[in-house]
Length: 104
Length: 150
Image (cartoon, rainbow over all chains, first blue to last red; front, side):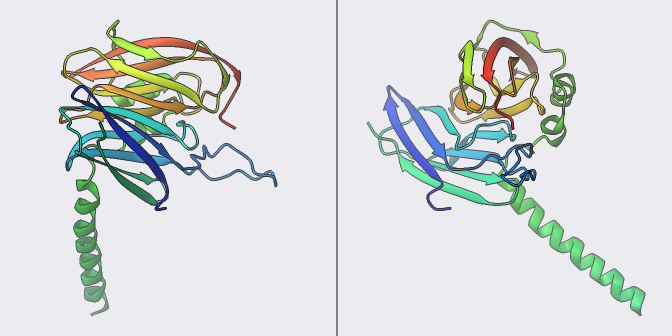
């Protein structure tokens, strides 16, 4: 799962604009496969984001978020080089994380 | 003797659970709201969120297409201009599970989030903001050409 997240943070004024993309099936539990069987629900439940180690955002999700979801959020009081770390957990206990530095 | 061993075993299991639980929870500010996310009607979801009596607000900005071609991935962007916004939740009234996402903010995060969500079909979308112990709501209608929950 090392490649599960693409993330980029750019500074606009003193606000870091963070854009990330998570590779995840986000199965609703209502979709049927080629054999007509229901595919079990499989979705990210929690995504957390930290700015220089302090939690700034925590998203709780359901199966209603799209497959391979993008996520954008903004952090005030950021500077170039600050660390933005994100991690996710899904309903099956899998997880992923990534870190980036705020770019100018 | 057998009964005693069982008691000790139970105590050991309980102790192990007590040790692991707080660790897994410490990374999470709030519990994933199982009742609200599992609700199958908008009324039930709002009740579980404690937001049944949310006050309509023009200070919640929603960017979402009026007509979405593909319900499987509808881009949305939400911003709250309500002071002391703690969280923003997104619900789609007619989805099988109406509560889609809730974003909690702290330590300088702007009350803003963007993502893509699924619409089972045309429906109202509701954004609930929690601020200063109160709930506020804004509603937008989205027409969906091809549903995206299958």
